[in-house]
Image (cartoon, rainbow, N blue to C red):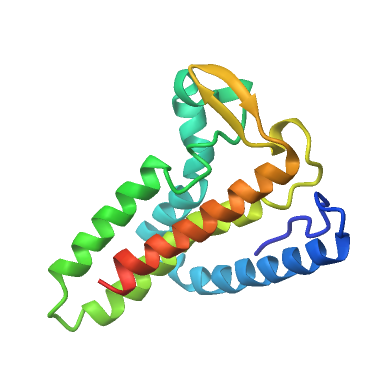
Length: 176
């Protein structure tokens, strides 16, 4: 379950931001509730964990490309352009097409959608750090550190990325 900081402030109108953060925290907890039952299946638990943490894992596995220890929250890994997320959506959509005419399809589509929501939850959780300094901000890093987003721009980037990731999941998995 989400235990982040829904009071992280980046806007001048703090009450609006707190309401938005609490709504997203409730959505994250709802998704986590559904994921709890799926996580009891041993092989799916590892997949859920990897999909959820892949943005941070990629930064550590490929530090020369995504910044590694020099910069957390790369603009590619923390967006809809995350390579692992895109591969997951591609494979999931192909599985949905393959099993479209079978009774398994009624179970497969919601299952793949909920698993993909792990990535969306990661992005939404990252919108609520304890402090918007250093590691919390999104960074443009391709081989060299180029730019660090401001707190408000970082939050907007994460919101846009989570919305686009959610939309992609809906389009590719639910509404094929």
